[in-house]
Image 1: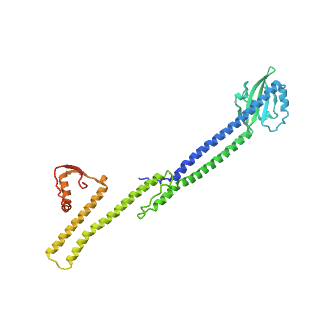
Image 2: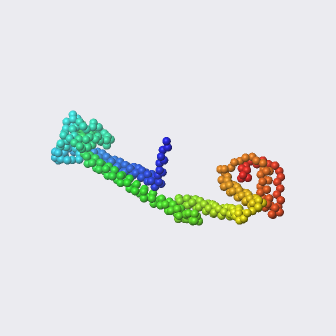
Image 3: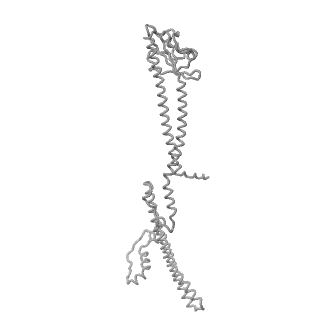
Length: 359
């Protein structure tokens, strides 16, 4: 079974199909990098905030009066008030010494990561989700007056998460609009870029058998189309030359055929005007045979010219006697040679490997 051939795509559609995905890929990479930078910046700001808060709590524990100072500071916050961070201070036995009001219900001590002596910046915060809110948790140890304390700090990142979702949705919309705009720009650019090809096509359509002298001006085309214009001009030169030769050949052929045909017709009409003798009819027939031989020679010459035009694809090479072939050519030109008082002699022997007719 033969499958139905698919229709070739136009250059404009191919350019659009190539340009649009490339532009979409570049836009997606740019927006992805932008989203990553914003996300990283927000994450670093949260880490810096947690590190500053822990540093301030350490200073309160070591220099500001211990857990009592922290407790007095946290009492300023009313229970249930929406805040962006929560603080808890535990002693070595795990007993709560100070904490943000309402922190037990939302963020119990056991959900925090294990405290370390190192600074909070040395260990990334741990994410925790509760009541549809996202928190960053961090814990660290601090020694003051020979006592060990555990500091737990939580930061509400729900607003940041909501912002990142909205920002991601905005980038998705920008990406979709960018892809659509890329497609429209690709279509516009492709049509504008291929407009000279349409102009060249219309110029070529105006050229016909009576306007083969027209040419495509090279100077008015883009640099990429100038070689094409030159190639078309060369093609038109060859077509014009071939057309002129064909027209001249047709005129010559008509002139060559008119004479023997007119002779045959004229002699036949004269012979039919009245009754003739056998000798007169014989003379008319002999003259007709001679004119037919002339016509046959013209036809042979036409076949020779046709084969000579396509000699590369229609040659039939054989080995033949060169002396005999030369004698035939000499006999063909013998009448012309006699008129010019020239004598042609053939001598020697040879075997020729060629197409005998063309030779």
